[in-house]
Amino acid sequence: MPDSISLKMESDVAVTMRDGVTLYADIYRPDSDGPFPTILQRTPYDKTNALSATMLDPIRAAKAGFAVVIQDTRGRYASDGEFYAFRDDINDGYDTVEWAASQPWSTGKVGMYGASYVGATQWLAAISRPPHLVTIAPTVTASNYHEGWTYQGGAFELGFNMSWTLLQLTLANFKNVSSVQGVP
Image (cartoon, rainbow, N blue to C red):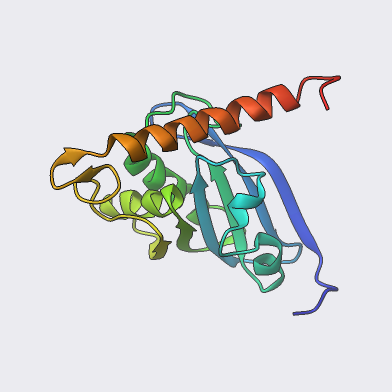
């Protein structure tokens, strides 16, 4: 992969969902005439965080000829709205896939990737069958949330759900505190 390939990176690109809520994405792509096949990641873990690069380096993928869209899910980090785990990810996933496919830099073929909750966003988007979603690559995730992470044998997994929720609150609050001027 040549290092001489020039890239274009756009931060906080607004994507409006069907209910009017705006979600924000970062886009990495070759700075040349497209169109490019598009890879989408929807994350509650902060699109600017190194965790977003799990499994795929967006810069390397862009240098290989892909457009990469990394979007904060509803109510998380840069995106507007209220975060409610999994509730809006079917419609938001559909809307984002179709938005990405309609961009002038996209071939109209969109694939999704990622692990954990990011893997779940793929299953949820795929349920709605967006016409331009051609593949998903979910890892370290469940395909059935009534038997897996959130429930086991019909019983709510309080331990897992509490630890995941507390981790998300801690990460969000740490970012808020660390962004205050004068705090190391």
